[in-house]
View (cartoon, rainbow, N blue to C red):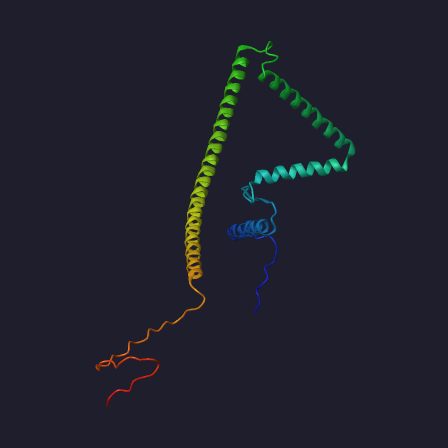
Length: 232
């Protein structure tokens, strides 16, 4: 079964009317909040009860800002519809801006020490207080700038020190590598020099073994070209 539709008409029962008002008001404010969040819009709701009580809801800001924006937009739309009123509006705005500019120029001249003849003691004291406050703000800003610069220089100094340490370590590694290369080169040179002194070929010298001598006495020598036979 579907949901039964409720007739949209005035509720005569007062307690039932108050309960319905409270529920529907809460639901209306909830829908307004969801509309503001989902659609990134500015929503304002004003409700007066039958007992003349005011209920309002503004999102994302207060109801006052919603009303101010509404009045401003309404005035702009009204000006666009009436060129004569629009011209008077901008003339009035221009007059106000000129007056503000003139006041700012006079204040600037007074702060720089000009046009002080027409000022009384209270106005001079106020001007002195403004200058002291301005000087304090300038000093605070100056100190902040100097502090920031000192911190930045310290960071740069620490970074440079770290880089120097890394460079020194690299130099030590390179020095060790160069020393090892020098040792290798020296050993190679020594080996090449030793090889240059060795002959290209070798000779094997064999010593003849001495012959054993006979125990018999030697025979008579050779005489006159012939050999004398030995007696048997």
